[in-house]
Length: 589
Image (cartoon, rainbow, N blue to C red; front, side):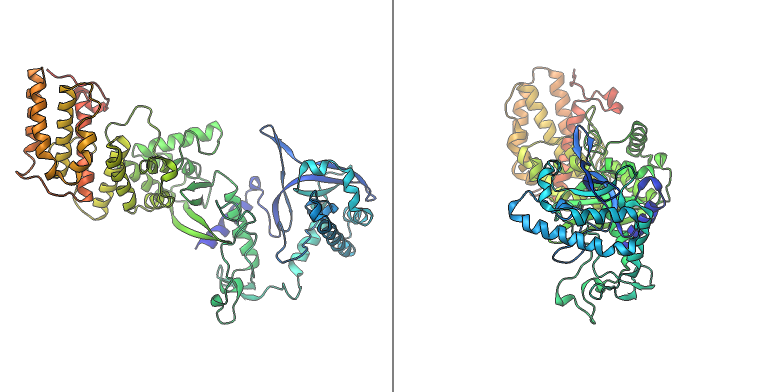
């Protein structure tokens, strides 16, 4: 269950002091200024609360009571923090000046009404300030225009910490959370889906989810109902999916925590993906690098973590995924999200052990294994795979990366769209390179394995392969090689003119190609080269029937291109170095 797993992750973070997760009733907010008061409540100064990062002043994250804005319409002042309009009646927009004054009055009235219950001299100092402050005085505070519309907090001069962190005030706030009894907001009591216990249920699942790409900047809801059609047996709003108030806070806070942390968040196509395990593991650190280009777009790590991640990835590519696993039995979760109006939709939800996910990733790399890997090739990533399906990255289908990721992480077949798109790109630009050949081979390999078929899709040249389509790809490569050797410097070869049609309707093309081949053989000046090339063609033809097929299926087209690629690699590989798979110029007697 998604919500239960997120709640468990919240509890993991709660037990780790280094994470500083917001407790129930609090939230992380970015503060830009501090109102410093004397003990009698008079203003000492309004100070810049931002901190310098990467040469720029940025808001300072801070845990404060409540959420960004309480649910509801109209004026909603926060408790001991808010924006300049609420705290000071300030707005740099003349059209909002009256609204800012009303916001300040609402903020002032709320705190003055709470003073007799709080009983804290710091809180009383804030109340004295609010009683005396006039919004017109903000014109003297130039710092407000500089820090912008960010949030502010209070501090008493000469005392450490902020007013909202004072023990008496925190105790008052937490008591308020327990005894809230406003009639229109009183939570309904019911049985929670999370633990089956009777408890106060959340009418709205808050805080809102922020950080999902292309969703509303103010946040969206993972669970919500807004139409009468969703009302059932008198249960409206989120009471249709009853979750306790505290559990709703926990799962939403845990999700927001990951969405704000690039070590637990990545983008796959049009989906925002978060991932975590039920305990700290190396796999958590490695996962984001697996789905991104490790060299540049992965999250920054310290040198020790980077070394562990690199070692893990290298072990995985070599078929030794367990070498880098410190917690193989830890549960691992992957959640893909996409925006949907004011809501967040679940694109995919995958659960397994770290070992299971590592095995699936290792199988993915094994499926992609292909001869002819270029020196210093970039590690395989989702971006690199999907790049092979379109001329420009912007033309890649937005859903494709998510579908490929799901196939990799679940061990299911690669999407047919990946295979078809690569075939389409090969036909469009008449280019079959290492990456495209590897993707075709991976797709066919996985299809055969999951179907329980005894079909080998070779990594390198297999002269005894049983499929004619594979050998016809080899034949095309041999014909092309003879042409380029006989007529060096050609701007256009048979590949540019015939590759696509040879892979789809071979019977219409190959008779002409074989006649051209005889013409080009006669032009080879080296007799040994002519004999060698004729032997290769005859060996290939021995695997074919007397008549060429009229049409190739998509699977046969993939085999054709793989055979073509393998034969070209064999031409440009010294056979005594074949095991090293290093390309060389061909040398023939």
